[in-house]
Length: 470
Ligand code: CO
Image (tube, rainbow, N blue to C red; front, side, top):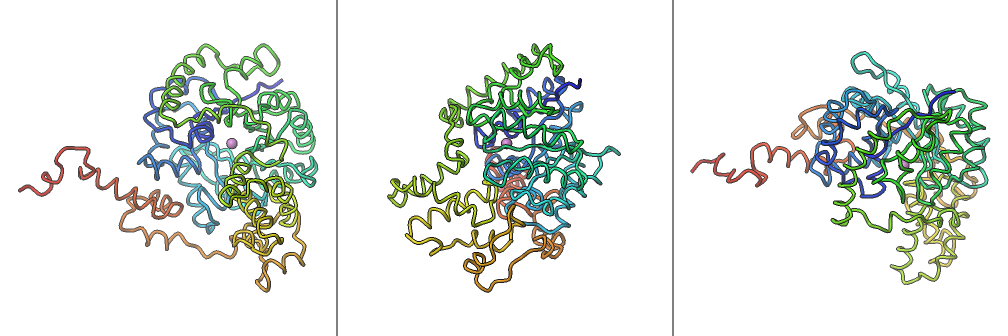
């Protein structure tokens, strides 16, 4: 019997879920040596939100953070999350940028790349998969893990996921992740799904689910019994709520069984002490909102992710129409069906939710249509799980040409152009890639970095007089 492997999320998803991704490298540094001794399958530490928060809020170079983590944890595989053709940004990028980003990520320290697409359109993943399979650091290859966005609804049967898993395997992935970002998995569904995929596809399965509805640890247990190989957990001070199942509890749950993780509870407990200090600090500063720590099964009742529910409510509040929430919640599945059943994750959750609000508030369905909704219907984000009715599409996009190829096929190579655009600031190819994804946010960061170097950031005494002696 094979041991269950554990992927630790405390340096990425856990703080993204609980404290808007604001954990700094300085907060991490004192505990990295101990984390490196645990023997995790991998430590997830990099991805869209960490990269964005580094540049936008923390004044950190995300690449420098990655290199530091690599140096401080030489024995542990580092993992990142990557949105396929969107990379870490919010639009589709040309293939040359995607390839360069993947190569540089591995070169700077990443060992496991988890790639996913919001629509589960395998074409949006192929370039990233191919690049990840080629990338090496010191002659060593990275692991290519492809994640399927889990969601519920009439088309998202076990067969749907088995078919997608087969495509993932054919595309060259080394492992598959069931990514349940909205905490919609239940323990028994998890067991059925894992069994179904395992019976058809011979790849390791990694289970990623959130604690939001209070079911995560039960889902992990049932999933492991059904054959899952890897579980994603978070050190207990930053677990539960909208985060993950606690690492130590899961390790204890499997101890002495055929699934024993082999991890040392005493060592984990020492690591816990450190993160308890951070937790206290984050709660006191208001970074962690206590509300995020309570279980909420609302997502399971309404079948929309928790974040989407609160968005809908705030949109209706702005319009003074909170009483229409029931109607909007009934409209969401209809809009989603019209739009070809996209899984409700960023960005499709916002697009479908906003359109449902418009349909209800305007008193006539699709009287007002958002640009983004038109984009989904036109095919700008890729192929939806179910084809969109041509008549409906015509009604929404008029005579605009539908896109049925891979959206990135319409993009010219753009790396050279991006290099030129940021030539005044970029000091490395990594800087170009930061700029590619976060534009002016990256430029502001580059300017601050330069100012700091010359002591112009106000942190090093009377810097101006040192540069221009009077
Ligand atoms: Co997650």
